[in-house]
Image 1 (cartoon, helix red, strand yellow):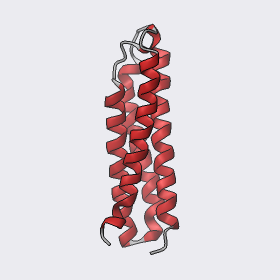
Image 2: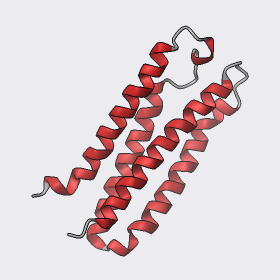
Image 3: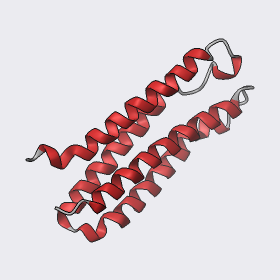
Image 4: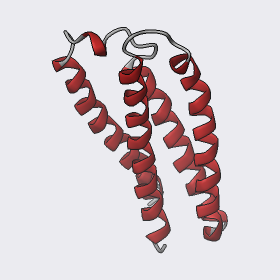
Length: 132
């Protein structure tokens, strides 16, 4: 079945939606806390960026797996390094900001980054362990 080939994309999407829901609930319960207000990037924007990057990386890994499974690990490392560079470029406005809650925004950004890195790593391991 052709759709089973794209199951890792669905896994990434579902995991991201679950993490976004939990993270959004945290912000909902802390909406009156001034440390969690007036961020440069909204939670939806950060999750949207990392979700699109993760889906693109997994799609590339699935394509590379069809060509040569030996190159999947190297492709994952290269794509992850590229995502780190782009993420750092996006983080620059946060790093240069002079607002009082900058520490909380940095932590929020890196938590989302770590969540998606974990999701991508687990899905990549599953792709490599799947013998088809």
